[in-house]
Image (cartoon, rainbow, N blue to C red):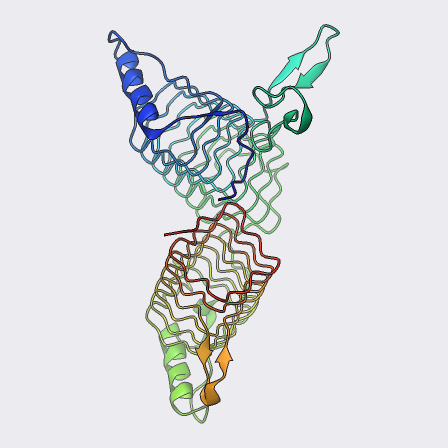
Length: 411
């Protein structure tokens, strides 16, 4: 499986070896004989499990932690200096006063985590020669040739937290100066008194985010999703969404002679609050929506065959077990969408014709397509970076020009 980083010259640990280090660290913290502080710098810890572990004050500097499971771990005061944590799961972990300077947090999940007073400012590893010149350190152990260059991801000058999730996180007094949080999810996070000079929040989700005492003068908020609506609202419709769906079903039953086709083009529809909607289990066959926002909206088990859904924002929308055969999603943003066990194969039309599901050019980064039926789907030009494709049926799918870096495959 291709990874999102270069892991050359780093020592890999087995799960058994890591468990032993955790055990001895607990002894060290409790001042017991035989204990030792967890020194995990410059290690390849990818895919290993530290769920619920107590590793306060541990050192992970310069390590690779791709797809690590650290849910609920106590990591207070630990050092993640220039560490690559791409797609790691820190949900509900405690990271109070952690040193994460120069780290790569792309796609990591910090939902519900405690990052109070954590340091996510710029940072890089460098040396000074006899003449006083500053040089960026090479890969661990590298001396010359192709390896003699900084490793992408963990010698970053500024923290890269693009597309990371901080939903509901405690981030009071966090230091984020210069950090890149483009398309990050900060919904319901508390960033009171955070230092955010020069932070990039382009396209980030800031619904319910607490920013008390934060100076936003130098923050890039271009395209950020905030509380104010950015399109037509269902709250302003003359009839509630239930009646709109009933009219649509009548339109289907009468082959267009009665009722009205559901068209949500340019609507701003969200999963909660005024104008929210839950389309789970609904019959939405052949509905239409373009340039609309469906952030985190549930479509679980819905019937959406042959729907026209081009150029929409479906970030974190939930399509679990939905029937999406023949849907045109082309150009849509489905980042972190839940598509587990969804039907995305071809739709059989009268006369034996097949209508393929269209996912051309879609953003499916970090999307969960586990067990989905993608037979014959058009994924040309789609971005499947770090998507979960385990158990998905990809027979006959068109992946021309698709990006699959870091995608999880197999059973």
